[in-house]
Length: 233
Image (cartoon, rainbow, N blue to C red; front, top):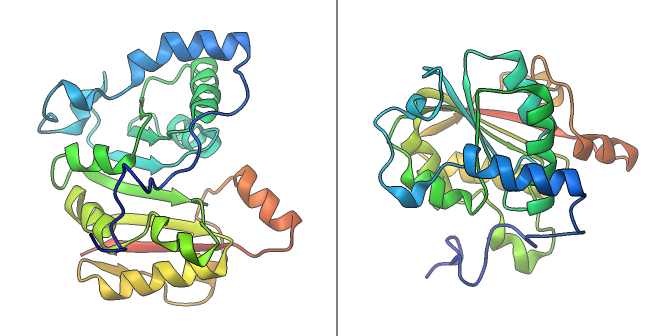
């Protein structure tokens, strides 16, 4: 097996699954809401349209991989109630926080998945997603761990399959080596093009951007984020 496509059994793209014990309310909402919002990929094949996963059957579907506490995901879902949002987060504590905040916000256009995003991507129908967000992913900064970075040719193949033609893949990071890594992988992939036409296109945050706690940490520590957008061609 090549270093560009790690095996889930030995080299997951994510780290630990659990942190501190959940607070009682978080634990209760996790137990109650996860079964309702989780996409049960093990139950059978995906519907022809992912809109069928939502009560409103939306035509536009957005996917966020590794949403942390869900701050960006929830804001986007609140701002665009006509769209369907799918969030992937294997870390139990982050999932619990997101579910609590989603419940408080009364979201009805959110579904989640709590395991390896590659499993969900492989389950999805072709050309079923309008946008994929990978925002401040784990940079795996040590050279020996770079093969665990989520951006690789195999996962870009997955993105190209599930994205609709013209769909967007957005990547934000404050780690220069990961930004360069992503640009190099995109340059080698025939189904994506970088949409930037000037430096402002990657220096300025996305339109309507509210920031994330990871971004705030980057600014505090003197790192400059990059905001990359790629189009599926």
